[in-house]
Length: 221
Image 1 (tube, rainbow, N blue to C red):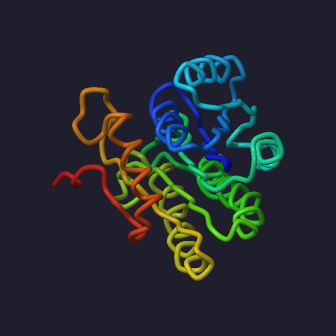
Image 2: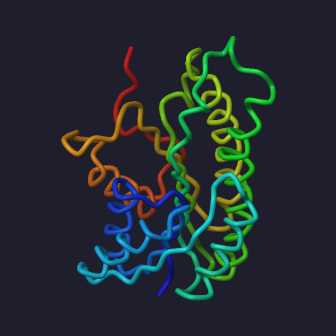
């Protein structure tokens, strides 16, 4: 059994993707800051027959993410699929003219340094397997900067550039890197942007291995 690891596991998209990949036979590593929330998700997944375990780490503390991923691989099996989709903090979202250089420290750690650390942690195992998938989930500001959301616009753009380069560099090793852009809110009643619909889309990106950037919905305007 190989493992699906999600950074930013929560009761919405995180739980939905855990269910989808778990139903396909993968063990699930739920990585987030709250052990209490992880316990709830593990219990829900157990009712569906999914093997899952929580690992506590903070997306603003890259070393904690590396430790959690190493622990997950040791406990559950090699990580074949990594999903990086934590929700940015509200204070990352400031107008560009109110954003100082120091205001970008946390957004860049969250959206660039931590993803790089996570990929470095799982690559040896993927290479040993001879395959792997890395999935990045971002909002629309990753491809269309918004002047009222400078922190996430800048940090997501950096994450997108890193992920695109990673896609090209790892393709010869049968490790697929893909990005899913979700332009609007994730809502249970949305046809294409509900947690369940996005989970299915992410699973298809893993199995289809077709291209780098994909959109859950057309970008408005």
